[in-house]
Length: 154
View (tube, helix red, strand yellow):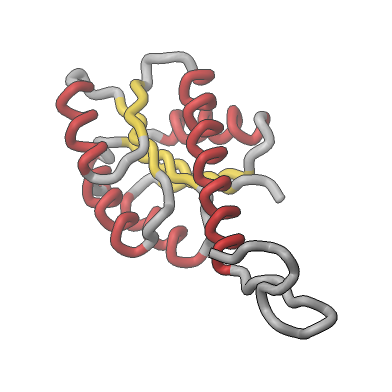
């Protein structure tokens, strides 16, 4: 199954460019041009990662969307993708608000793509670990007892 990305940017050209790039890289992509559209998509579709413009113009705020993701979709990673001039301030604020990274729009798309791959690899590894830890211990076929198969349970 292809990883699913949600790209949130009030500039349609930026959204379309990112969508084309990530679709070419093998991702399934949805776009939203406002905070409210992003919330709707998040409510009705599963995503593996969200790329959020910090300044959504008159259509909302990237900070508000990050807070919403943190509360309503815990564990869903987000990247702030911004053209803002003050990345150090943004970085501190965005990371405090649970963004995984802040990437400047004037950088190469490959930098954003590499960050997406890094975060998804770490996130998916964590999901596999959580599924493993949640699985019941193996049953011993001879006795029917859990944990007696020679596998140490924690």
